[in-house]
Image (cartoon, rainbow, N blue to C red; front, side, top):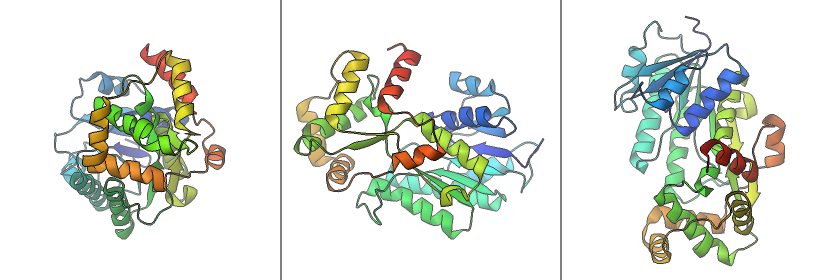
Length: 302
C-alpha cells in the first residue's frame, strides 16, 4: 500500500465526509482514502467503495470515543504511514463535540499523522461568540494547536441544506425562528450560506495543498442573502413558500431552547463575514444558493 498519501476519514458516510472523498478522488485520484463506517452494507458506504482509491472499513459504534483503537486496527498500515485525517462530528451535545474532536486529534498525533483537517465552525471574526455550540469547536481547535499537530480548520457558515424541502423538523424550527422571529426586524441583514459539497471541496484542497494553505484556516461561504432573497429563490426553484414549523413552537424554541436562542442572538448581533469573492480565487467551484438548490432538486427529484 502506498502510505504517504493515505487519509483516514472519520464521518466518511456523512454529508461532509462523502463530499470530501468525492472531491479528492476527482481532483487527485492518487490518494488512498480509508473511509470509516459502522455499516459497510449501507448505500452510502457502497457508493464510496465504488470510487477509485477508496477502501471502506467497518468500525465499532464507539469509534470516535476510542479512535486510538481504530488506528491500531488498520490492516497493513503502520504507525507513521497515515498522511492525513479528516475529522467531522455530527452534533450530539456540546460535551461530546469536544470529547470526540480531542480524542481523534490525540490519536492522530500518537499515530504519527502529518495533517488533520478538522471541520469546525465560522466564528464571525469574534474571539468569543458567546454561543456555546460554536465555542465547543474552538475548544477543539485550541487543543489541536496545543499538541503540535499540523492542521487545517474548515470554518463553514450555515449549510444550504437547511433551506430545502427535506430539512429535518428540528432545522425547520430553526429557520422559522430566523424568518419570523429574528430577521423580520433586520430585513436588510444578509445571512451567509455554504453548500455542503463545497465544504468537501475545501477539505480536499486542504489535503492537496497541505497545512500551510491559507495559513491553516479555510473560511467557507458561497452566498450572502437576505431572508427575502432566500424566500424568492426557494419559490423560483420549488414553486412555493418555505415550509415552516408552527408559530407557537418556533416562538417557544427561541425563548426556551438555548441553542436556538443563542443562534438567533448571534445572527442579530454579529453574524458571519466571510469574504466570498476572495474565497472564490481558491475555490472557484463555490455554489451560490440558487445553483445549489437547482442541483439539489435535480439530484433528489424534488
